[in-house]
Length: 307
Image (cartoon, rainbow, N blue to C red):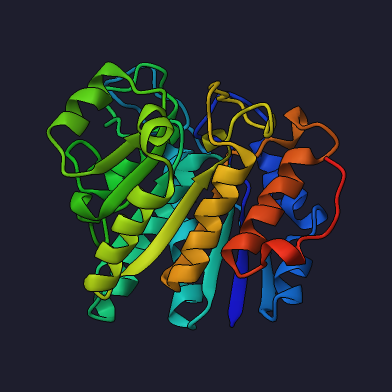
């Protein structure tokens, strides 16, 4: 019953400034206090920092901040591995979604050391499946899934992959913005995908329950990587990559409640929160409430709050 909060204030993976403030916004919104109210021992280890170098050239001239993202990847991996080895639930507060290139491979290595597979629930409008040669934007927050599954093109640019994640162990929910190159990869991949049309047609509970049963049957550990743009921008405006038609307030809470009921979640990313774009902390407070649902807060326990 212990959680370690790790601040990863990276905005090197995106051209939209502001995610550097994400970890402190979650602190201000009361993340630690919410977890403590649920009986968790919470240790906030502060914000990581890295050398902001930009000296790693690549043949894809669109790419920016490659060396800095590499440095973030290494620092985040080390901090995540330390927390996991201590038996805590690492909660990594971003920062842009490139931080998942640090958290998830480190957690996969830890799971392997325990003789367990790592599964990933990827809650995001985007699959983030670009390799370095296919990204047209050059924004490296679009590459972590390709890296963590061991796709080609990262050697010499990102840190050596400590343990790849089996694509068959990844479930993506909420997709609604997929580039052509990513669509081609997904068509050939065992990654499980549920775009927003599928969710509209089939709901949340059935697909998620089936995936959780798969994790349980494999005695797996489950990492949740939660991108703010998974949510509909009407309820979560504080993100630089808004895509209309995202998850509703109740859909998001239902996911978190089902995850808690499963007892399978061992780590969490909260990413792409950009307080510069928020409305009086609305999105940060929503992320805190969703995390509380994941960690055990029941509907009847929710505080009254004006949104």
